[in-house]
Image 1 (cartoon, rainbow, N blue to C red):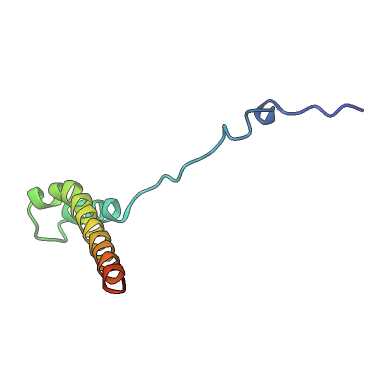
Image 2 (tube, one colour):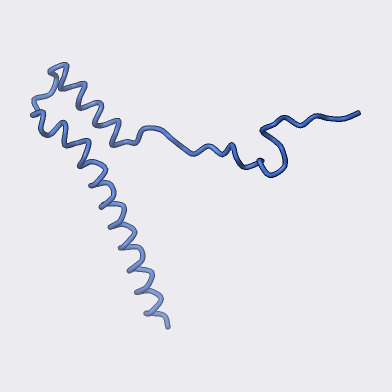
Amino acid sequence: MRVQVPPAVKKGEENMNVSTGSGISIGGVLAIVLTVLKLLDKIDMSWFFVITSFIWIPVIMTIFISLIFFVVVVTVVFIEKLYR
């Protein structure tokens, strides 16, 4: 009896169907919420700040995460040099 292998699982193609994580980030959710609130006239914020939230939220989050990483690396290096 022969077992037929489906085409997507042939030898050498096992890892071809790898899916990556995709979705909306926290900054994206916040930007959408601000836009909806502005459209419903629930917030008194200028459109300039609502639109720039699409740009500045990811930039600020990247800077914040980079700063945390830098502080951790500097602390580890300092502690390693201290105990040598």
